[in-house]
Amino acid sequence: MKLELNHDEMCRTIEVVGDVHHSPPAVAAGEECADDLFIPPLNFAMVDNGIFRSGFPESNNFSFLQTLGLRSIICLCPEPYPEANIEFLKSNGIKLFQFGIEGHKEPFINIPEDTIREALKVVLDVRNHPILIHCKRGKHRTGCLVGCLRKLQRWCLSSVFDEYQRFAAAKARVADQRFMEMFDVSSLKHLPMPF
Image 1 (cartoon, rainbow, N blue to C red):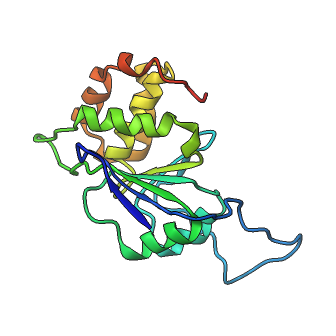
Image 2 (image 1 turned 90 degrees about the vertical axis):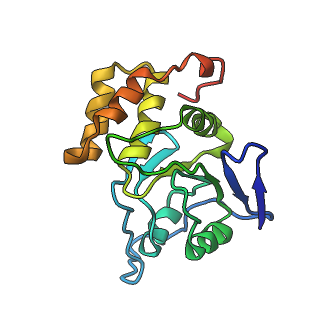
């Protein structure tokens, strides 16, 4: 395993070195494994082809995540990635991009625009697909990143906010919605869009 810290320490990257097969595990027709329960992480959903979102994956979610054939994971939490999760990444050849955004509550929320911009560059790079974006609960930080992606996809703001609120529910934050509304996507429009 190789740990890279980029020069501005905005993103920590863990890359697995070696040849790993990225196909989902094969199950013969009619074969059922009671031991292999496929439990998605909290707030799991497909964002677009090859792009998924969720809360923080736990060990009981690993067999489900294997079926996605992930190449990369974006973690938006600043805490060190748990050892069990790192072992899962290593054994499945999944690259981790960690953008440590603090999980603040209103009114002192400060979402770093540069960090969201760098995370979007990772999401837009099809070489990282299939990719999972997650934070602790898959609501606020993940919702902001996905909302900014939706702006790049030219979604209207009301649809961006509707999707954000579907995941954040009663915990929706006005400051998150303000951030998504004010986020300037113009500096990312030169990047190839996979959709």
